[in-house]
Figure 1 (cartoon, helix red, strand yellow):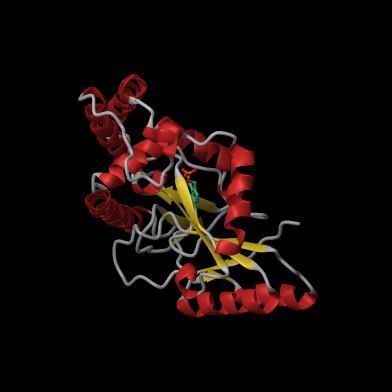
Figure 2: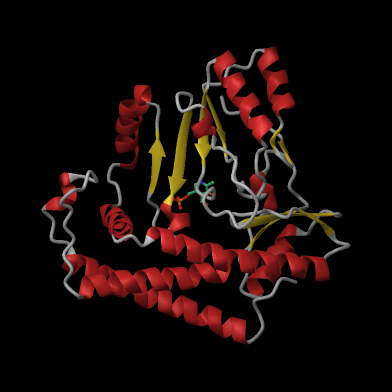
Length: 307
Ligand SMILES: Cc1ncc(COP(=O)(O)O)c(C=O)c1O
């Protein structure tokens, strides 16, 4: 059975969860995004982190901490992750799609040793074939020492975009709804005072080159007056371009991918990936250039604004 929890400004409602547990609910896994939640950007308070982990101990469930936005903090102080607080009870996951470039779809999980083998086997049976080329890109990116400076760049860029969107909301939409002021992540959650004509809104947004999601998709019930506002949009396009171009350079320079000290699998160690690598990168780079070009055109025409 799958259930849901109410979300408050400082994370999930622990009271509501406690009531359900008292009534007899016995979860096996509890999934949440404690840092810069998607879609609201909210962060779970330290007190709630402790209370959730106490409940996990008391009622014997595991907690899945999905943390792809955790490192993307632009201001304020980091709180300990759930995994830091109780590694025996928490499965922590993250995604390089958020940390290096969208579309990579390479992530990782840090698991309690007791269940690691089971999860690895289940994952293998589920996805059949991992994206080896993308894993190779991530490996190379980290091995080259590019991740930390790249994250520093992303933080600078995204925090400026966050500030611009907050200023634009203050200036233009003050009487139309309420929103939070996240200190990181990708999203601001905007709740309008009145229900929205969602289909109409999505169409209008698309006409000006903005792809919004139907707010109802984020809720079990309701969401008629909710809009998730991503503030990193153009950065993602330039990010794709920059990363693909750097990989392309690597491919073209005949920089064969070899993984001597890799625990990322002997799979790669004997593969000469450079030709496939270069071909795939040329195609994806051309696509990225085309899509960036159209975004830049729209930007120059002043169309990429929030109305
Ligand atoms: C909280 C969270 N977890 C996981 C993902 C998926 O990441 P990936 O791009 O690696 O599939 C997303 C993507 O939007 C996300 O917001």
